[in-house]
Length: 217
Ligand SMILES: O=C(O)CCC(=O)C(=O)O
Ligand SMILES: [Fe+2]
Image 1 (cartoon, rainbow, N blue to C red):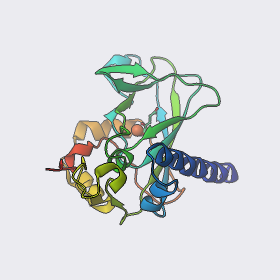
Image 2 (cartoon, rainbow, N blue to C red; image 1 turned 30 degrees about the vertical axis):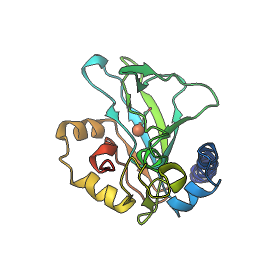
Image 3 (cartoon, protein in one colour; image 1 turned 90 degrees about the vertical axis):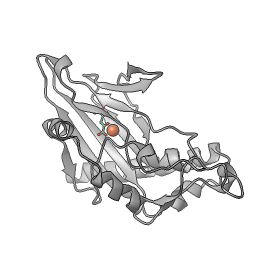
Image 4 (tube, rainbow, N blue to C red; image 1 turned 180 degrees about the vertical axis):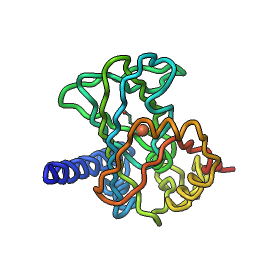
């Protein structure tokens, strides 16, 4: 079991790096731009267990949030759907596909891409009679990573930057110092999130990028 989880973590990490390289290329940046800026990335895995709820409309497995990290690779339960993303103001189901991961752009890639890639709002609903499992792998910038849009996207003088630059540590400090919604966190607890010792990190959800990213004037 330990070996399987270890291999999974290694493979998922490599996949994450490859996706970050492809995203960089799609933005017209050097292939290694994002992986260079994010540095030695932290990796964290959450195994989310959502017990069945006879009245699913009364609760959430995981309330709406964006992922505060850089990139999330999500393995969904093939038997039970539950993930929804917010699209044009409506919650849309993302049904599981065999042999497919769901890739979530996190807040840090939204900032790094100057808002071109969007950190998607998502939530998980529970099922009336079946439990659901999901395995989320989070790639996080190293603490001192300076998150700011590159000149190629924000202009030589930075005047086209949508967000001000900040370090990931600063982002996290703000994240933890905001008023926590007690109800939200108790609901999170009910989802039985288990932290696996992949690489030390933090599970943190429900962060709005705009909270720390002051629009450039
Ligand atoms: O269970 C899911 O499908 C979503 C999990 C998730 O969004 C998270 O762990 O951040
Ligand atoms: Fe999430």
